[in-house]
Image (cartoon, rainbow, N blue to C red):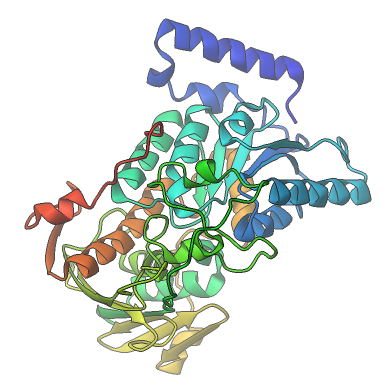
Length: 443
């Protein structure tokens, strides 16, 4: 944890720079002056924003490490925030670590957690429509960031996030943990080094969502700040299946509502389409043409597609097909002129089978190695080295998903300029690259 004099010095320097009007022009101030992380013995103070289904899982994951301490949690659901605090207090009490039981602050507003001087880095595990605002706020405050995938709800948000992270010099790791899975890395390395010949086709299979009926409005639970939960999204009446279950941490309804999430095209596409980009060496660009079709519910609360298929064409000639399991089996199939590799969590197959035991030679391409996604984030906080899934790479992978959603909704073939990040043949599609935010929220 930071010593008080280090905190005061950083705040003094920041306030002075802001008063002089030069803070935003000097992003290198944060990593060079802040955080005192050159000492391997100093704990990193973590604040967790969002402690629901994924947030609680990621919280427990980060508690594994001796060189961090979770010092604050924030959630608009007071019951979830209090339960997370209990988990933290019990953990540190049992492990008898410095600053243990009773040292965890609880907030309802993410801005207060970000302003906490004991917080060095944040974990953001909020609904998708609530990623951009806390990420940008944390970056501007000099806090390093772990954010769940997908990086953003809209392409414009993703561009702002990536640019802000770069400008302020903070570390951002997106929760695309397949980048820290040896099988996925090895599959991409083999493809990059020509083991399947010339790569020409990638087929991606993912899950699909379901529809539901109309759900009547319900009273807002007393422990839920529903207006804050909606945040920048349009106002809609509360019903439990719009938000999250009140008596469990089961899969929440917001994952199936377009105001808050794009459905499985980002839910799983942020993982598998990211691997496709990694295998093709297109991590800093994107497709040039997109065609998609989806089956959307005609009525009811949930409105993301229940079936979908998207075809992407890249400038290198590779075709990427992404669809639900009625089209393709789960995982990523990488097809080349002399073989194929299929990879998914926990398994990898290939033809010819010799590919599975193929070894890289001296001088061949070796990709970023990370054996543990959370550990990689923490190590990069200390070293200031880019993490396994940094902001710009995450933005480009998320963009592929968003482009697929737009193509499905318009039902037309779209021409995309990945440099300008604009469509060349549809102003209707360009208008879908951003969304207005409900007042008073803005980026």
